[in-house]
Length: 366
Image 1 (spheres, rainbow, N blue to C red):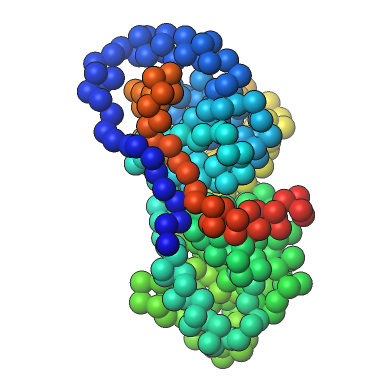
Image 2: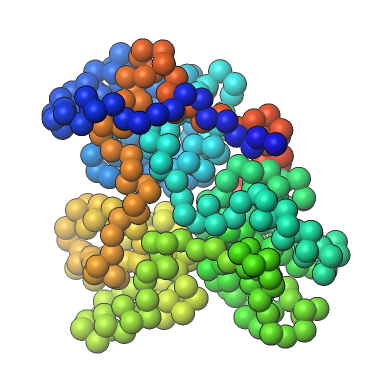
């Protein structure tokens, strides 16, 4: 089964590498003016400044997909984010709208940690162990195929903003949950709503094994063994070093960080939650932020009256997210003007039908 198809794609022509930033920016501005409302450019918070300056809207992955769905007049949606985000936008938009990803290499290591073949095998094994007692949930940071699997099996998608309410909902459906693909968000969320760590197991998709030391009937939450390669780099030692050097600094982290880091931080929440917390903070307040570096740097620039640092001083931006740059954005826009349809993301009809079920179950509780 083909879970999605990518229309014509390829390698960035070398001519784009030879243009200056000024030349590329001028051409992007001209194309935006030429296409007008036919063009819509959503930009994820983690994108580079050189790209985000041209975004019509900025936001997190699901927020951007919903804004794409609400924009009925745009014929061309150039999604400045990563692959799973463009897939979700295609799922939620109309047939006459095309979604483009400027660089097909812009993936997500977390989403790639759960493929449909691993998930089907896991579901077979887990339902053999537990029967019909499991509700599957997937973080929106997952492939269209995984969203479709969850939708087909009575589950829903979740975001870092609504994970608490969605996990509570899932427990009204079944006795247990399977949480894909980020074990840290699943663990932190379940712990917050009162599930003890002792009732959480981990499914390892590499060896198809359930990692748990107690009696399996005690298991309430099965966490997929996946993680965000950016947020897992924030450590307990980072927090200890900061507490020692500046006891007054307030530490806020994303719930994709490990349980140990979240527990030691002063606060945690989604990307939007972090942005709002900084915007509402008192002038002169001091913050260490545990999330992607492009966003942290943007918050530093936007709030010169506050002292802001990254929780990890050696943190790098999200490498896959950063594949979208000025040359790829311009190439994508040129292809639209030239009717070339390069790097179009199109999720097949069957996958879309089941994935929408998972998304709608979540959106109905938004």
